Image (spheres, rainbow, N blue to C red):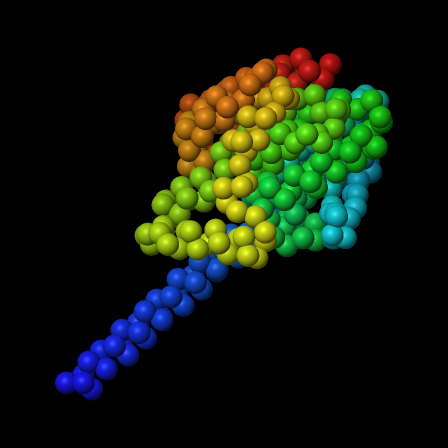
Length: 314
């Protein structure tokens, strides 16, 4: 009887131990894999979706208008960006921030909008963990904020001390845009911002994605993943909050979202818009999925964005 009870206790302890190992290991893997995404290797998809941009891309490359720039971050890691001047000298400048698993090249269609259609200087960084920038781990716009602030200062030095800047981001880049615009150290050159399909917080978007993509209950794996993030990277999912940042921002901001967004629920844009004080514009596109607003109607997107930024840049 005693041996049988002992065997049961040992078996139960082994099972519990294995479950704990699985929980800790699984949550750690989720955290690491999510914050260390694959890097974009080509832009064939962009050329297929936005054929009207292809000729412009070829032109700026062949005429040596498109330039690389590298600079170190605070830890000495190399960051990369692409930049090009406007067709005619101007202080009007756009800093464009790509989304998760993207790269500077993934913003070529928005670069076309600003450079070709509106006549702006353009700076397109590879955010950390993407493209040619060295840092491996992303932070969904949180740690990126300091690096984006430096890129804005870089734009000021590239395009002149009187540069008038719009920051325009898509998805994770939109989150970084909102977070940056809530910083006290935001350069005065930033006159307005455009966020396209950004989310309220890393906690909210990961929590929502877990429910959509996994049959495994969120608790306790999700909470353990957040703990891993604090241990490995020094920040928490709740801490990375565009919603809180946008509430502090005094920068005029345009909010763009598709009401069929399968990645960032459209409800988030209404919360963000409500939290923003001061000058703001909301454009919700019916039937449009995540990050597809420009693809849906390039002319209308260009008209609306051009009209908004023109109020603050011109």
